[in-house]
Length: 135
Image 1 (cartoon, rainbow, N blue to C red):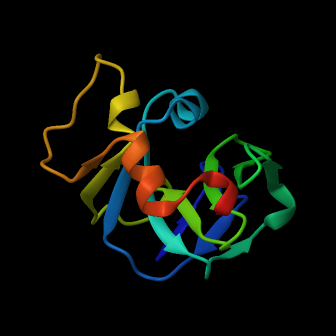
Image 2 (tube, helix red, strand yellow):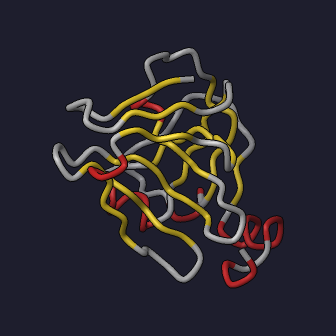
């Protein structure tokens, strides 16, 4: 799958994936102004224009990146595994299905998705994937 930022300075290629996950945590909402709708691309993502990528260490276990030229959010990356979560809107294709929602207990009341998906609270995410210090 291929994608790029708004201005095209950064482009990427990653393995095919057809599912989007929505994260309602406060960090994702503050970063993008709403929930993060991202494709789990795993660790095998290739970027061109990497000199235009700015990286922010958003926690001890992850980083977020954006294009220096246009500000497009490029990814959320888990440091321990090297896995990338790339915003769905940056892909050239929009052939995705909303498959899961996490941090649903942190979701504000002003929006709701109609899709019927598995929904995990913050506690359930931590129980399933371990505390962030282990990532």
